[in-house]
Length: 239
Length: 264
Image 1 (tube, helix red, strand yellow):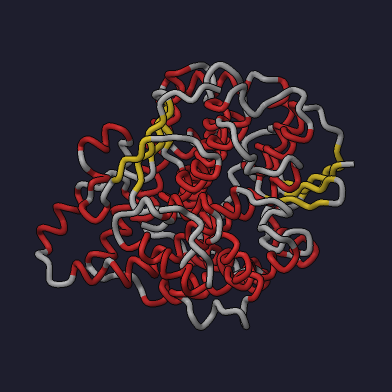
Image 2: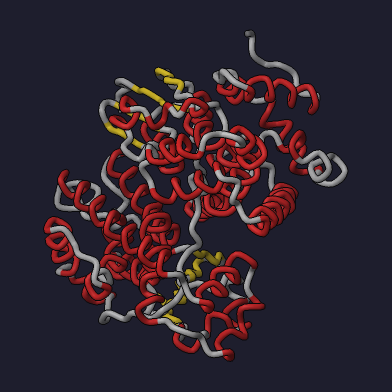
């Protein structure tokens, strides 16, 4: 049986949970309490040394990274198929999976931290030393606080990401065109947090958001908005 | 799927520019290659910005469909064209292949790019008129890119960032050597997009990291590099450069004792 380690406060967890729900996959659910920093406890780091949710276990394999888990689920359980109907739609799926990591999530965590974070108690920082250097650096930076310039740059980046979404939605009701795909599931939980952080959504994105939210699997997987200040992926791409 | 028109815009055949080229030559897909000279900022020219408003390289245009993300485009090329499969069939192996590419794209390649551009590109800006440099910066569409270039132009990359990048590259060298001690190719028994992605950035390691990447220190990585450099498709694409990459690839083949497979 599939085991799924996740947290309801993690947008990445929500994306993968939507796919589990869309495919009605039976699984053992293990919740990780991010509010108490359970993800930095040795027990969870034994499951994922990076201290990140979600983690999927299937057929003796342990897999991390939400978007790759989603692709895995779609390739292993193709009914209903959510990977895109043709190569172009599948490229769109891959592109948005990547954009979540490069254009959305790293900025969302900075803005969310600025809104909800603030100084971090010493005992919350105890687990940092157990993390790999990339993750530790990110958390130490968060604990020290992001500068006003960083926060405003990230706000602008999110507004631009919303524009990119709007542009792609000119080609159809869903991000990959005619069909609902993993691209929608990957992006939706992140965009769901934009309004609460004061980031405006263009009309086409608002309409898309309502379409995604109306899906029964999405309703079942997303149980209320939680803006917990946690770190997402590191920002890739230099130069 | 039909062949149609395929236009590929790249700079020298390495890093992100190398990824689509290496995939296309491996699958023997014909395409029109457009050389965009980053040395002359051609990626910010109005002609290129009309294709990719982000001003990033590469861009791949297939029958009017524009792709500007190199790793997703690699999956597209394997998906849309005939030729040898470059992704394993097994979903778990695919997960592994993608995880390796992510590690490369997010952690390793940016580190190597920071080190290389500080060594190779930064000296070009020394003594230049700051006003002129500012004007060049203003042409860069993406703010995060602009910030990186600004650091480069004004020699403002913090030494601790460079130090951390060096550590990341060294760690990656060890990690990949260990992965290759377990399987022939990075994602398993067959040559895949993961090998192409890593090779695009790591092809020159025995020259750029002569103390760390050797037969004694990293035998598995060296074996893999020899096998990659011997592939005719990689040699063909590496020959598409106009600058130093093509020469460098030939130098590497001599260093590694790999024969020239290509007729030309």
